[in-house]
Structure formats: structure tokens, C-alpha cells
Picture (cartoon, rainbow, N blue to C red):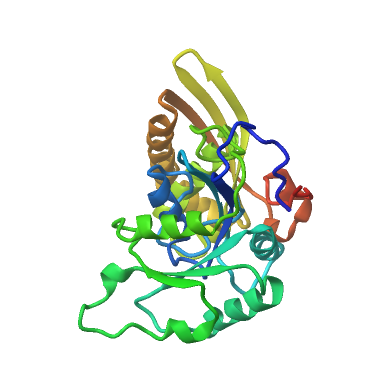
Length: 312
């Protein structure tokens, strides 16, 4: 459960609105892209591959009249490993915490059995929580083509259409969410966009580059642990351990004469320097830890453990 005990400001207008919006859907439907688009800044890594998001994190939108706490959740799928079960648990927890559920569907594709399972899940876990349906990827639809019948899946408070990638329809979604949130205070400073720390940001940025540059099983078999993070004048020094499950995966990730790991490091350094506004020194080491995705102790060590926190 997500704890919101700390109120940032007691001085808030009577009509100010705030609350939690759980953003859910299948893998790779554009959840993180939509949150980044509404916030106007990247707070969650985004790739074209499914199951990029592994744990939930907040994206914080603040205006004079509202503070919307978006919970970016892992894509809901059938888990095969302890990591998969953790990801589904994180999504389920977010649903239970939410004041509103924003369900993202791919408007360019017909509804699937996976979509129906999510509808059944919503009906079981949060039957009374308002649900807003966002039909994403409208830019992929031919204007003459009829929309797939997503409306038949579930009960809706409202259905909106958008393209998170090009930014259309996001303001309408935001205004609908604000209107549906309860009256409440501001929980975070106006300039804070996320609840993640810099170590997590660094680990996710490295993992994002690995996902972008590798194929097949590699993106799903990788975990990144920041073993050292030190602020220095004008720069940040970061040391990271990259874990895979087999020696063959390690060889692929390092590449011929170290070509792949150098490219990953170069792109991760550039991305982190842009985000942090400082020069970045990055040292990476690739290690093998057999079946780490089923090793719950290791998963907790790298941040994949559900917090046992109570919301007031």
C-alpha cells in the first residue's frame, strides 16, 4: 500500500484536488509514454519492447488547482517467474490504492483475452473505483477504419482517445482525471516530478539502453545494481553491476572485443548527463547469477520487493 502521511502544504484551497491514479494495461500499450507526455518530462524509461516497467513508481503532476499522483505500473501479464509475480503484485497493489484507474488500451488492435482478464481483474479488485479508458495509439488508425469494440469489455466512467507518442488528447485525459479526484492537499513540492532516487534513475537508464540495444531473451534476463554512486564537483561517478542468468548472455552483452558493453555505457552516460545536468563517469561490470528472476533475496536487493506501507 502507498503511504501518503506527509502533507507538503497545509495551506490549500478548499477546491484543490489530489489523489492517486493507477495507470494500467497490457505490456507495451504506452503507459509510461503517456505519463511522461502529461508531465512534459521523462520520469519512466520507455522502449518498444514489452515488460520494460518492472516496479511501480510515481509521476507527479502539479498545478495550482490539483496534484495528480500517477502510479506507473508493470504491464499485466501471466507471470512465469518470481520477478513476474512481483510485477503483477505491484500492479494489483496500485489498483487497490487508486482513487481513479486509467486503463490504457491499444486502439489499433482488437481486444484480446488478455484485455478481458484485466477487465475481470478490475471488477474483482476495485469494483467501485472509477475507471477512465484511454484508447491510445490513435495515430496508427486509418481515419476510415472503424475502432475496435473495446467499449464492450467493461464499465466506463468515460472513454477518451489519444496518441501518447505525439501528444494528442493528453490534456483532455488530464482534465477528466482532475475533475474526478477528491478534494485534498498537496503531498509533494510543486517542482518534484517523481519519487525515485538517483540510484534507481541510474540503474533504470542503464537497463533502458540494454533493452534498446539487445534482442531475444537478453532484455528480460538483465538486472542492474548500482554499487557506487558518488557526487563530485561537476560530475557524478557511478559503478554498476549488470546481472544476467547465463554465461552465453554475458558474452552477448559484452560483445566482440567489448563492443556492445561500450555502446551501452556510452549511451547510458549521455542520457544520464542530460538528466542530471552533470558529466557522468560510468563503470560497468557484467556478472552471471543463475536464475536470478526466481531468487527473491536478490530481487529485494535490487529493489524488486513490494513495500509494506499503509495509506492513511
